[in-house]
Amino acid sequence: MTTSAIAASGLRKTFGDKIVLDGIDLDVAAGTVFSLLGPNGAGKTTTVNLLTTLMKPDAGTIRVAGHDAATATKAVRAAIGVTGQFAAVDELLTGQENLQLMADLKGLGSGEAKRLLADLLERFELTAAAQKPVATYSGGMRRKLDLAMTLVGNPKIIFLDEPTTGLDPRSRRTMWDITRGLVAEGVTIFLTTQYLEEADRLANQIAVLDQGRLVAQGTPAELKRQIPGSHVRLRFAGGDEFDAAARVLSGATREEEDLVLRIPSDGGAKSVRGLLNQLDDNSIDVEEFSVHTPDLDDVFLALTGRTSTEAAK
Ligand SMILES: Nc1ncnc2c1ncn2[C@@H]1O[C@H](COP(=O)(O)OP(=O)(O)OP(=O)(O)O)[C@@H](O)[C@H]1O
Image (cartoon, rainbow, N blue to C red; front, side, top):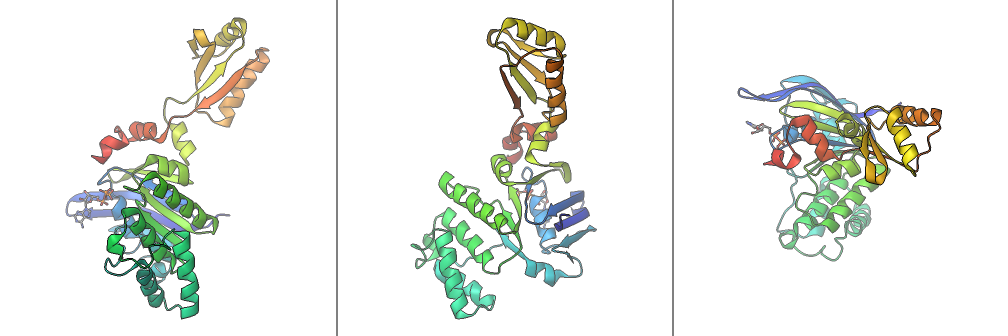
């Protein structure tokens, strides 16, 4: 049985007469990455604020690490780490001093703190810059320090708010590797991102938020299968097989020159097996077989009527 690290039900939040969250349910399995995707103003930050006890919902229940967020606020806060917009990195202090401050706050002994800090600086590639003031750090370095500071408390659930926005590809990959490493250690990650590729690569589950409602939830593959456009592509060695298959398979689109048939399909195991059985039953050999699923940009367009780029404007 999988346990929920975060479970929210019927979350509602309004500001004045603006309904920001209109009854959303979330269930994040422990030790997984859950990604909340949505255009600007969709309510992502509001959701994070509610889940991290920074705000109270108008309606709905939230359990984080098994604690009720409404009544056990302290226990929830002790179990989570939040990086991103709430981070309190002191610009005037060095990276090392910022980390030390966090270790002092958490009450770590000097020996333990020394080892942990050296390890974190090394892991986040900040050892060389450790003695420099944060004011001289690049955006990527700040973000890494921010996450390193969060890890000092050894939280079991981490909220990453757009962790790679504006980072160069190398720093982005480093953040992805660190995230994967944390999950391998059993940490649960709640990730908001504007990069569909990031959610696609990192997340076990994705929820798409649009105008206060979750318009879709599932694994990246499930989301991709939900929308029109996925198909199975079959290539045949000769014209006879090609023609025979085209007669047998309904709805096939012919690409005559390449002897390729494209058959609309959800790409799931059941329908693919059915398709191949049909060919087998008619003794038709296939030279090449592949399933094409649309990427998350297609998913976004299908679900919200906008591309992710349009939505972010
Ligand atoms: N404290 C507040 N008072 C009034 N309105 C608010 C408040 N906080 C958020 N809103 C409004 O709620 C809506 C959702 O905001 P939220 O920050 O949750 O969206 P978001 O998905 O995180 O967007 P972004 O990616 O731009 O941060 C927006 O229209 C915003 O203007």
